[in-house]
Length: 71
Image (cartoon, rainbow, N blue to C red):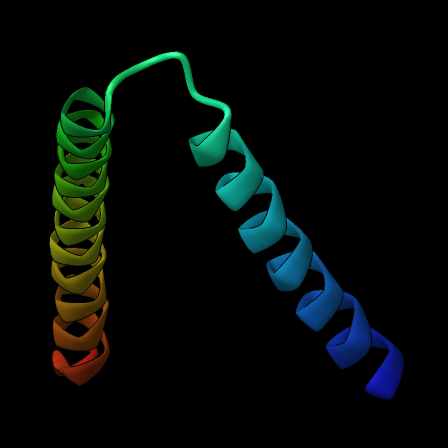
């Protein structure tokens, strides 16, 4: 378990360091970069909300099927 946790922490820290370096060396202005990041975050959040809604519907249908009386 400690190996997995260590790996996950290392991956997250590495990703943050890589993202920071990418931002610092980006060929775009700060305004453009912030706008692009904001758009990507909003698109990602919309995708997550859609996936959650879809999964919720699937789980509700499965729950109803399990609750239905069997013949």
